[in-house]
Image 1 (cartoon, helix red, strand yellow):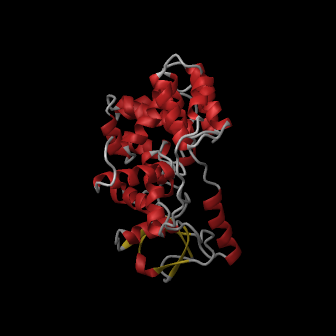
Image 2: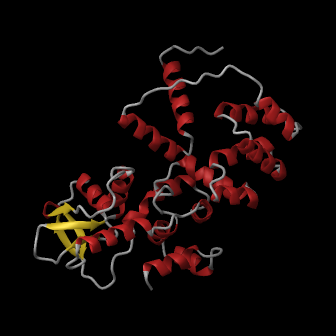
Image 3: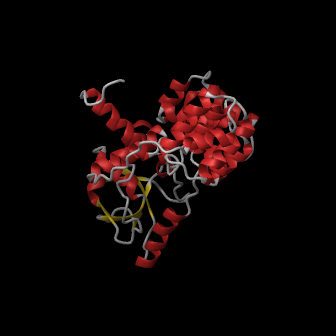
Length: 326
């Protein structure tokens, strides 16, 4: 069975006895299943590049990295370094699961890499002497560009619902041990808890809007907290947050007021959140490395970048004695 068919079998419908039987084969199988099912590259999770299927009929060779150059026909010219640390961590832990694609034939270096440049860059970052490769044969520049474009355009993102189901299933498989899930997948505990919380408590309507990217996971959790177990109330709160485009500070106020006043109506909760309060917006020019670090932190912690920045600044100011309790 081809990798793509196996992925579809694993991701269609509810969890089947076939999947349960696979889990019973051992933890390695569970890890490999997570890689295939929930490890999609994140915009979703990062690991698809290390799993992307290789041509079936070609031999795999270990080629010295020094003999390979990046082809000018590779369509990915930007964001080459984006989330490269996560991909390198994946390869370091699990190995290079699928080869990259080179132009030409084996035995005639130097070689041009046309597909899998981020895997190539990750292996270089790990100081690996060789990389697993397959050869595409003689290609024109147009043909090489088409192969590269197909690799980068035809990937299908794993939506939030599929990822949440996979993470929640692993959580149950490992005896509801979230730390074990974190160890096996590399996903932060905060994000694992978020997936599980949404999978177990969010309504179908909330999940639908989340998959459609109309709302964020953080806002779904806020609505669930503020509603105190009332699913209908949670849906309406989430809708108001989106409709009125509440700021992060207003959303925080919404949750705090709702938790302190469990009998308050949706209208009263939103009205309280929208009351004028002292809130400052500061525009800051960030160095590129700080900006990238902020994006990585936001993704790993399942928070908005502005939330991460505000919390980091608050903690730093408190630690330095510039903010005093009370």
